Image (spheres, rainbow, N blue to C red):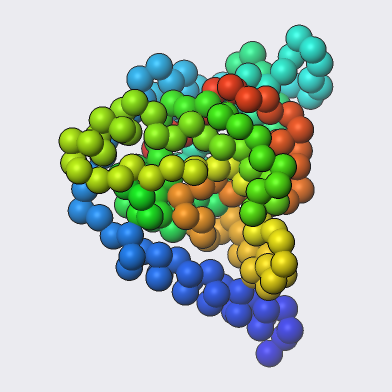
Length: 209
């Protein structure tokens, strides 16, 4: 067997084992409808295909919206309704279950949020914290007597000591497999670029499949 094939099998096994363990722990029968109120693109994602692109940013053309599509597994950086960059992403291990319902369910939330803070010292290289839960999420959780969870991020690969194997495994499988706890993941190089371009309070739309 070729070394590259063995690496792929080992890394795939690691990611799948992680996801399976998470799904077993976070399985929920609750279903929360997607909240698309006030979103510009999630209600009609075909609009994204009609947008023009922009090559350069300046003081007048800054990133003002992040649109994340579960249907295409892509993150788009927009400036004045034009696409500047697009990245392939991975979601939470509960991706197939839909909208986030509660803490530790492995699902990625859907709706309108914003960048709450930027963390250059994140456990996942760098991170932008999503303003989850919003008012709709809190109301749903209260009505159903569950903890909505928190700490949803746009982030890179695991960082810090003893994370070399995890980074290697993800480099072999990302973004094909959804491996996060509910966050939106890109590569380290990509999060560095996104981190440098996006400011706090930038709007985030996370669209359903």
